[in-house]
Image 1 (cartoon, rainbow, N blue to C red):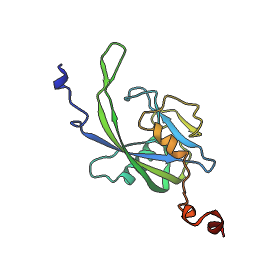
Image 2 (spheres, rainbow, N blue to C red):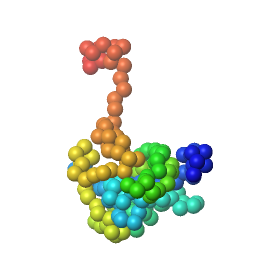
Image 3 (spheres, rainbow, N blue to C red):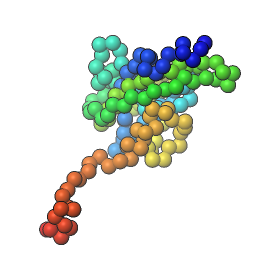
Image 4 (cartoon, helix red, strand yellow):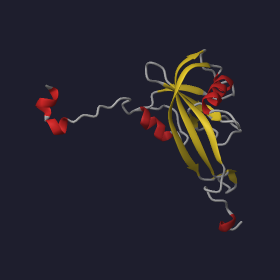
Length: 170
């Protein structure tokens, strides 16, 4: 196969997925290990899955979390959407394991659910501190999300510089 015949990332179909940030009150987030037989097996990710044709991301996430973890989502809100280009993945013998693809991930923060999450698809699951993971490797598209989880959820924007500290705090 010549380099000209290899499809570029822009030629590939974008795969859309809904992803859940399931976070306990103590700050731990739920991660799942991709099971054997799936692309990127052994890598850790936030739970979720592909959005079916004519399915809204919110509905896809609820369906996926029920199928994968056995939990019923009671409350969630959209957080961010991120696209990521995965390069083709080859094994040690140079054979293609996973073709190149672009994913568009719709992240939701799940604030309330019913049931205790279980790995219903033979996947390991683990509650993790986003700033101090004890599991690895993490799927490349999800790694920056851990950093984002460490950021403050509320920022104050002021005119302190214009007013001066004394007048501003007065």
